[in-house]
Amino acid sequence: MTPRETDQRDEIVPRGPRTGAIVRRLLRYARPHAGLVTLTALCALAGVGLSLWVPVLIGDAVDALVGAGDVDWEFLAWSVRTIALVALGVAAFQWAQGYASNRLSYETVRDLRNAAYDKLHRLPVSYLDTHGAGDLISRIVNDADAVGDGILQGVQQLLTGIVTIVGTLLFMLTVSPEMTVVVVLLTPISMLGAWAIAHFSQKTFAAQQQIQGRLSAYTEEHVGVQRLLNLYGRQVEERDGFGAINGELYQVGERAQFIGSLTNPGTRFVNNLVYAGVAAAGCCCVVTGIPGTLTVGGVQSFLSYATQYTKPFNEISGVLAQVQTALAGAERLFGLIDAPEQEPDAPDARALPEQARGEVAFRGVTFGYDPKKPVLHNVSWHASPGERIAVVGPTGCGKTTLINLLLRFYDVDEGAVLVDGADVRSLKRASLRGAFGMVLQDTWLFEGTVRENIAYGCPAATDEQVQEAARRAFADGFIEQLPNGYDTVIGGASTQLSQGQCQLLCIARVMLRDPSVLVLDEATSSIDTRTEVLVQAAFDAMVAGRTSIIVAHRLSTIRHATRILAMKDGHIVEQGTHEELLAAGGLYAQLYRAQWAQEEAESSATE
Image (tube, rainbow, N blue to C red; front, side):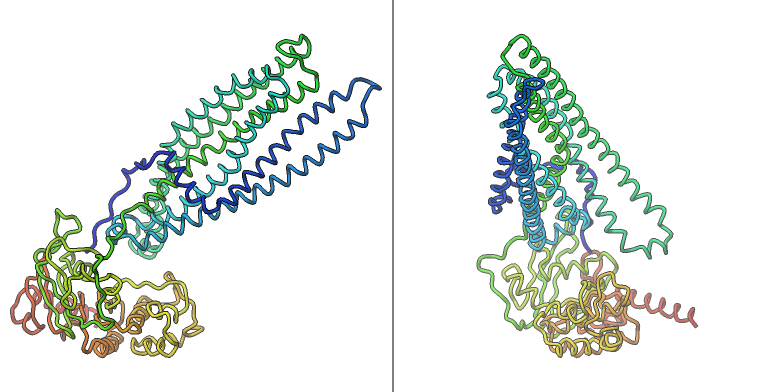
């Protein structure tokens, strides 16, 4: 029994830190790459400085054209050559700036992804049980991509824009202070408009990232079960479910992009007004000398500077949507990175011996995934080293919860779980879990060779040890028939292997590890009856002298257990051997006879 995943659909807008705090935190991740930041800034300064020299050169060249037959050809030729060289310099610095800013973006995102993925391994199981896998994947992949795009655009456009604005102001002041005042007075209108639109669009972009996470979670949940969808004829319903979330994302995304798209044309309109005002004022200066004296070349230079001055506002406003998306993605990433970690081992925690004795005990254990709704009620039982304990009961009675507590994926609310006489809370988690081997109903194989999958828990195992584990699990027969034997590449979604074969490989993995305590949770549910008999014999040999805990629905597999615990509604209602519990006529007897009757009926139907 596992806790139900929380529904995150109402979490439309993350309640995270303010924008300034997110930016400062992103800067801390960029700090190790200060060299790239410095290179980007220097290239921006040099490139913008050279580009701002061009209007002066053009203006002087215009003034060299005094009239027909009165041209300073020598100065004009020098100006043309200089402009060409400056253009080459600007292109070189822009290329270097692009290279440095791309490196900065990719390396910062790499560090963010590493931090987020590393955090996954330090989170308690309770966090992973209450957050969809697709949403977590979306944070590490999609949100990190959004942050990278935001950093790239921010560095390239914002930094260059700021340098351009400051530089053009300085150059304009040298040309005409009076005209500069006209430009500066009109600038706040553009800035205030862009700020207002960005402020109102922030929540919309945050909602867009949140819904994108839900869509990823839904897709991840359903892509791998297409056979079941076809079997139950649920294609239309699942398409409708996907379409509903996708439609919601479309509506929120459309609203976000519409609001964000208002910024650029709004600032362009204001900038065109600035340009027109500068042109009119410049003409007055040339003709009347009011408000200042300017040559025709000076007006040309000033118009170029006015265009360059207003251009960054257009570019900055154009990337605000991307920056807002990046900030929303960063907030979700930091939400994962800041999640409370698994409670650390106690300072005085000790390690189990490498070969634990395998004594297990529950003493008055009460536990609930929700403290107000206990799953286990005052549960007590004891397993001596070498005992084979079976746990049975109807679905939801708390069987798997016993395993979660034993391996300390969760801590008890009351009572204690003991291994070799020590409270598991006083033991180091790594040594505790290292004493156990688990074979679950749900198999997990990663993309790699058969040999790598079997040796996952023992990377240093030799080829002979891997093959011996496969033989003990009766998996060597089908492995040798694979195209490349133990070197055949398989994966979690591989169609080369049946479910039963995947389960045999997982059993071989545990056999190679040779644990002190073996936990089997429906370990042979996907294996045919004949193979199950063989694997059961292998288990019998492996668990000899070791404690084993078997969670099973197929009661015929636990008839020879040392002791059977029958559970119902979080209580152990009876315990004993197979024969004792059948004679008692209680819950176990009811379950066994019902299952036996079902198997008899299925056998008769087959005949």
